[in-house]
Image (tube, rainbow, N blue to C red; front, side, top):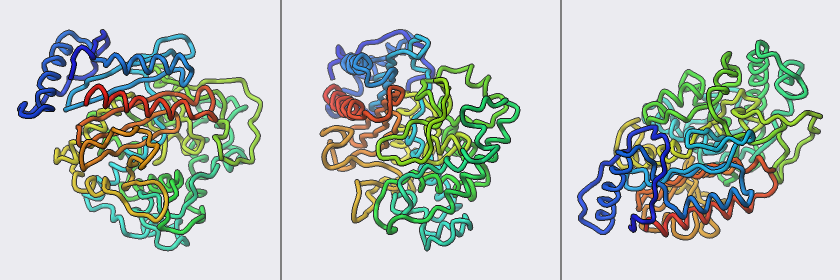
Length: 445
């Protein structure tokens, strides 16, 4: 690896770099030793490493209005080799590495890891019918948690379940044009969540179980199931069993019922994703509501997904906010768990989750993990192709991705708020994802 390709820039380093390297007995081993020397120097100077062509690529993407803001972070051989932030917030403030982004469906990865922990603790049986854990789910046959994870449950891909909340006198006050008194918000959130839970558990199947249809509703049900077996809300379980033991201090849900919500939001920088509520429907989403007249409000720190919003900001399919560096760390910790690290005691379950889950139709997937498509993949043509183990990860609708190349030992996170410019044009983020991963492999080998 040519170290001239890596530059450094002075930023706040939020955590020590993990510089554990094995002996340099191979070409990659020699690269790791050189990388270790460089990164020890960078850390001693309180600077953050950056791969110049990656930074240039993201600067160009922001300039081309793919997204108003972006971050990227890459961990290779156990060390942070790239961290950068690009663009500005609506008030003109430059985006820094600590700014939090709505990572949308990457939430499903944390839900997946939590499920693996509960499997290892023998609290969750993947092959037990869901209705045994959630009686209101009855009437849908023997759909299992395994099928929820594999997106083969037969549940619809998406439904605007939040529309029911728009018609309720109390729950509707969470949505414009109501100017909700913060003191009344917890009651409105509780009512909205009650309606959403009843709606998703009563939702009929739309397809044959066993056939793969990527389903947000399936992971909503999975989140509720984990709450039932874990005895606490999903946010608490995620912090207890996943986020805290893995050291992910800048990844969490934003609970819309929290009494100190305004103070929490004011204490952080958040990349906004839209200025209406409900959001403008995405391509292919059929809704019956008409957006009420409302002044544009950015509301940073409020989850973009309307179903997750109506669930109070905490759901199995969406709701997490994070940074690129925390996401890259999540990917690295998953890779280490698969190698037997044992931080959360979920290695065996995660290994089984990472294997391809067979289905007669649909894209390749593990249990909860996305796997690269045979062609046109978001990771390009080379990421995950260095050996037999391949790659796994997930995408997020807001313009985010986390991918782990298991053979190269690379965890790469890209986060943007591309939906702030609109929800209908997606080719720009598709192209950026491919170029990001292709460029990364070109630089790291």
